[in-house]
Structure formats: C-alpha cells, structure tokens
Length: 140
Image (cartoon, rainbow, N blue to C red; front, side):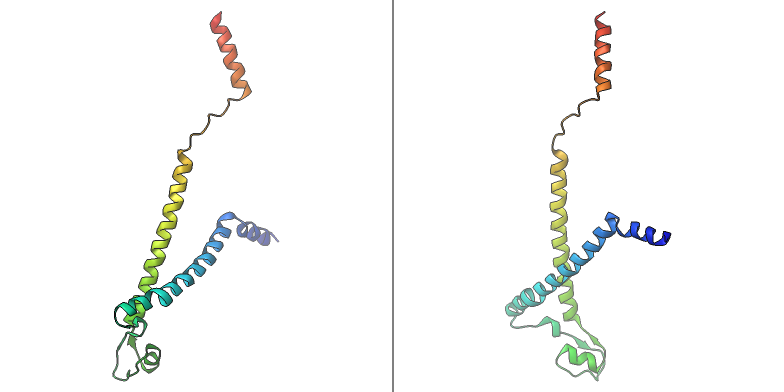
C-alpha cells in the first residue's frame, strides 16, 4: 500500500506532469516540422534546383542495389541514404531554431517581469511599534 502512495506522490508532482506534457507537445511539434520540411520546404528546394527530390538520393553499397527509389533499394541491400539524412538535418535545424526563439521569448518575458519595480512590503506591526517606541525615546 505504501508503494502505491509513494508512486502517486511521484506521479502528481509538477515536474513529472510538466515533463509528460512537454514530451507529448514535442512529438506533435516534430510531426509538424517534418511535414513543413517534407511537404513545403523540400519541394521548393526541388523546384529551384530543377525538380530534385532529395529523399531518393542514395548510393548503393553493393552491386546488387539497382533500384531507382530509396525504398526499393533498401530491399535490395545496404544503401547510403544521404538525401534522407539531408532532409532530417533540415528538420533538426528548423526545430532547433524554433526552440531557440521560444526560449528567447520566455527569457525576455522573465527579464521584463524581473525588471518591474516591486513595492516595498509594509513592515509587520511589531516593527512599526518598535520604531515608534524608538522615536519616542529619542525625543526624551
């Protein structure tokens, strides 16, 4: 029974829940970026470079690889899929840039919050009374 209670305390801690939410959002964001690169950026690059499709660029590492598409070539043998790697590298660069700007924005908001002047807290009643007593004694 104690183990269940301990697990419950662990699972509902803010850090664990925040981490789980971050992982889910990160996975969804990764799919969005993958679609952005695969469906928008790479076709534009392909159009600029004369219709090149980087995802099918590879070198066969054996003479048995004779296919014209990467998927078929992988079935025939080992391949060096440098076009697919280029696409994944572009995905990473976009995700890294997006995360950089998100962190930069959060840091800017934190700095603005920290720069706001904080009104001095009113001293406790005991301190006020002690100050009054001190002032009265100083007058005598």
